[in-house]
Amino acid sequence: MPRRPRASRGGSGGEEVKMEDFVESMLNLGGGGEGEESEEGEQLPAADAPQYKSKNLDAERRRRGRLNDNILKLRAVVPNITKMSKESTLADAIGHIKKLQNQVLELQSQLADSPGEAWEKQGSASCSESFAPTDNIHYQGQVELIPLGSCKYNLKIFWTKRAGLFTKVLEALCNYNVQVLSLNTITYYGYAESFFCIEVTGFSMSPFAG
Amino acid sequence: MPRRPRASRGGSGGEEVKMEDFVESMLNLGGGGEGEESEEGEQLPAADAPQYKSKNLDAERRRRGRLNDNILKLRAVVPNITKMSKESTLADAIGHIKKLQNQVLELQSQLADSPGEAWEKQGSASCSESFAPTDNIHYQGQVELIPLGSCKYNLKIFWTKRAGLFTKVLEALCNYNVQVLSLNTITYYGYAESFFCIEVTGFSMSPFAG
DNA sequence: TGTGACACGTGATCC
DNA sequence: TGGATCACGTGTCAC
Image 1 (spheres, rainbow over the protein chains, first blue to last red):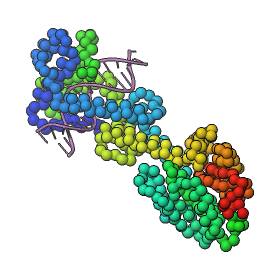
Image 2: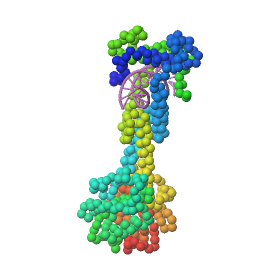
Image 3: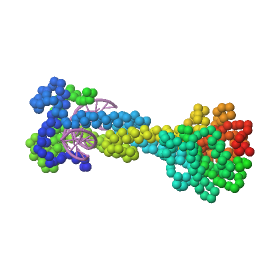
Image 4: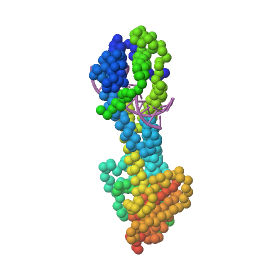
């Protein structure tokens, strides 16, 4: 029986007065106050008293209104509402939040997947948040080179999208006898980030080195 | 005053009995039931009556418990809890759902972003759901070519990731005098999808065509 | 008929 | 000391 933390037991003798107020207000509400004070009048003569409002009656009303407003707003942003009840609304909101979080994780893992299959192990920070285009950082170009093995590197280039720029980068790579093993490019709002997994060889079988 | 739809005014004469039950239960609760039935005994002699429970007392308790459980679970899945209150919990949940939905939309637009800046207008279906790696469809390779203008195309290739394969594709493009204007590649769980924006020219200034 | 969901006003508690 | 929040038991409505 963990409930019922009532029964403060130790207050002054004023409890009966409060109880009487409570009973009176309940009777007033039950009677409605229209015209049938006949039965109530004989029980409690203060039937025409000005309602004996509790201290926090309207505050509690406001609080309930805010809570219900939030329940309504929550019901507005959750697409799959199974039942029009508070409990179902909360349960659906919980399920929707979990589904959205899984979706975000999946999309981020798809975006963050890199050619070297071990990009994070190289110490490069995961860039889930810094990718937001609302960051007011203006890059003209940013290059990062991370050695992987003997001749392998991860090349990370951040730039502003421009037609023909990608070809120039490939040209430059070819000039250094670089072979592109794999490549990821993410473009968003005029920016682009490319992750090359490259291998530097003394010679090249590809016609690019011609 | 839109509230207070009470005062049904029209019930039978059994209202006093219900009110008495209510008052009695309130008094019993107020006393706590430990040992000080002295004052209550003189007010209502039915202090040892079996509580005169309302019809739906425990049902209401169960309902409240479920609601609070859901509030707790909701508070568990929302990361940014500003205040430990029901209202703030709901408000934070609403904000979190909105943030997650915006994040999902942004990530999906990043994934669906294509070099031609108008990939969707070419009739290619938006692939937010079919990208899920849990789809048990095994591709050996899939190529799609969508004409954009006079000499421009969108080339869409779906393959299984393999080292050196990307170089072979670039070789093939070079053999057709194709210039890569821009490129998006998304890799996930061993699969890769590349979106080329290419231009076919009779000659090429890039060294690839050598 | 009765069962569940709600709104209501209250007392208690925390700051 | 008030203001805010909460749990409580009730009456009422709908199915």
